[in-house]
Image 1 (cartoon, one colour):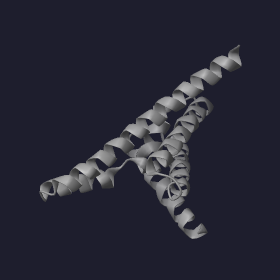
Image 2: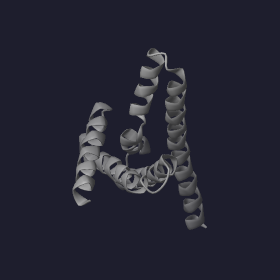
Image 3: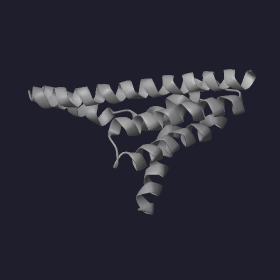
Length: 145
């Protein structure tokens, strides 16, 4: 069980780091970008077998938001640098690809099923990022008072 977790962590770290590079994140921020993506994917990877993919995606995305806020304050960088690179492992690209493939093959019922799952997961990513921002704002207000 440990070897797959290490493999998943390493590949998600590299993917997030390289997407940070593609998106022109500052060079000294690539390691934190990779870390955000790796930890979010590992949370998804561990939670998903026991729960639904939507629940695992939501939990992982909230972690992305929290870690992005933390790294943004620590390194005095915009939050978007870390959150964009961090969501890369969670983006349902395979589902989207399969939905388009089934549309081309005229298997519309399967295509709609895959497209709906991809849209739900993409919406879950958006909700998770917004939720983490709301929690951050509420926490900061409570600390200030």
